[in-house]
Each structure stands twice: as structure tokens, then as C-alpha cells.
Length: 223
Image (cartoon, rainbow, N blue to C red):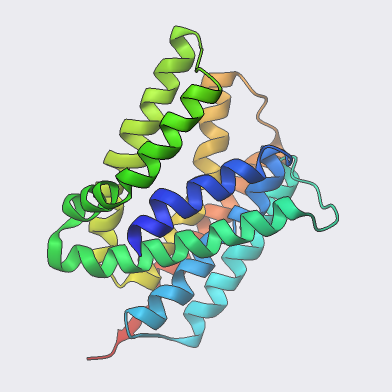
């Protein structure tokens, strides 16, 4: 379940979706991931969040989607790319919840490492096929970026993420993801010299406050 969700499902579905949809539009749909993870974690983790948590999680989702819309992901009619992005959100939510539970037994780094091992036959086959059909090429900077994505975003980052979910409660911890679009914008300003407007700043503050309030809500975990 973890391998299918975070190694195969989410990366491939988002990659295919972003071949036809702009990244800013994809951010609007991906902003629903914290709420989807909370629902999945509550079901699988036998957690019983208070209604106030769901209220704050819903507000956080609305604020995050609004933030993504303000930063270029304007509304448009539903397309096949949107369906792929919704599927990616579902796959990631399942992978996060199952991984959080498994990390309590195996450990955080063991969980993501075994997920990569299990998915390696399929991913290796796809990689070899892609290399044969379209030999890769890129500048040193592009290869460095690719290496960072592979080592940090897709591997080492999950050590901390699954450790946090394992400590739990998972539904509560999942709301930390609301801060992700804010960090993306801030890094875009630092690395890509993108303009930081007052609207963006206010949106960042709103998202962070929503995440903070959702995380602070107490949850009850059933036996």
C-alpha cells in the first residue's frame, strides 16, 4: 500500500497530469491533500477527531486552495489532468496513512526503504524503457536538481515525515502539510527571484495560522 501510494501512484499521476496542466493549477488540487490525509488517517488509525478539528481542517483546505488560486492556479473546467491529480491525492493519502501505521512497527526509514525495494522491479522496468526510448540529457544544474529530488524529497524527507506520523495522532500531524505551498512560494522567491506581493504574504500568514490551529486541536484516539 505504501509503495503503491507514494512510490508509484502519486509521482506518476502528478507527472502525467502536469504534462497538460500548469504546475500552478496542480497546486490547487494538491492543496486538498492535508484534508484527504486526515480523513484516511482517522479511518485507518482508529482516531476520533473532535468536530472542531474537522472544522479547522476544512478551513485550512479552503485557505490553502485559495492561496494556490491567488498564486496563478486560476479556476478552469474539469479536465482529465484534474482527474489524475485527484487520483494522486487519493494515492498519497493512502500511502501516508498506511506508512504512518507501519512506521510504528518497522520504523520510519525502514518503511520508506522497503517501499522503494518493493516497487523497484516496476520502477526499474519503466526507467529502462524510458531511457531506451528517450535518452536523458540535461545540464549539470538540472542533474543536481534531479539528484536533490531523488535523495531528499523522495527519500530522506520521508524519514522525518513518517516519524512524525508514527508519533501521531496522524490526523493532527497531517495538517502540517498545509505549510508546504507557503514554503514553495518562499523558496521560489529565494531561488528563482520571483516577486513576493502583499497578497502572497497575507495568504502565507493565513495558511500558517490555519495549520497551527488545526494542529493544536486535541484528538481522541480509540483503543
